[in-house]
Picture 1 (cartoon, rainbow, N blue to C red):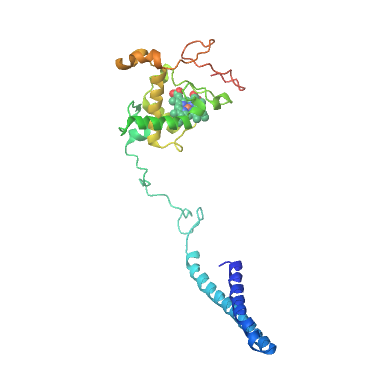
Picture 2 (cartoon, rainbow, N blue to C red; picture 1 turned 90 degrees about the horizontal axis):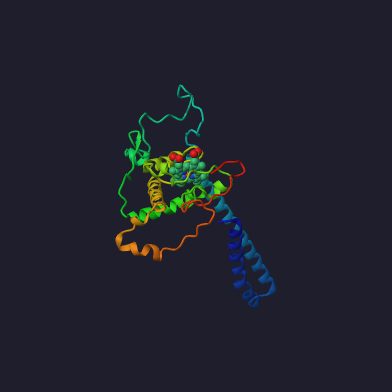
Length: 266
Ligand code: HEC
């Protein structure tokens, strides 16, 4: 109980007693008797305050006593030295071969994207629903990668436009032919100027992004023959017309900004 709440409770207790008794007594008895009664009430009130304080003091003694054992238990504060071990370090190395919970990583392909030393080109697991999996990859890509690589993957993201090194387009032949494991590895360990995203994006999501990059690459290099025969007739009629600036060199190329302040060219 806080001090304010404690005082309020006591003021209420005392004044209730006075309200009930004193007016009735003044009516019945002489002024002197009433005054004597008033004094007695006052004294009684003081006693209860004293009583309460001593109870509080008593309980605080009991409860503070309980905590001491836990406070004073023998322990080493991190990095504190110790006379017990020859190397004078209180912290000991884990026993060789110890694996932290959830860190076994038995499935090396899942965690490295490599079989032996070569990158693999397939997913390490079969997603329950490929559409949901790719949508998740798209969402994660748009959050973590598009600031530099832009949403289409041309490498013209806002951070690059503001001075960071321009990433390569994900639609160049070298990266279109790169295996999925390579994308996973780039996200897990970084690549050149690009930082790694291992702590921000979990393993499954990194594979989802890798799969989405593949989908992006297919989308940017699709030809009319890729559309199945049932939908062939819709290709030129229902797809929205894309505006291509007249100074653009090719239909697929998105115009890039000029070399940035540091002179780094796209
Ligand atoms: C801060 C900006 C930035 C972000 C965010 C970023 N990248 Fe990069 N990325 C780069 C740069 C810069 C390069 C080129 C690095 C170099 O060549 O030094 C690059 C290169 C790459 C490459 C090509 C590697 C190669 O073989 O040439 C891939 C693939 C890639 N990034 C994927 C991703 C993915 C996936 C994400 C999201 C998880 C991502 N990047 C997020 C800046 C970024």
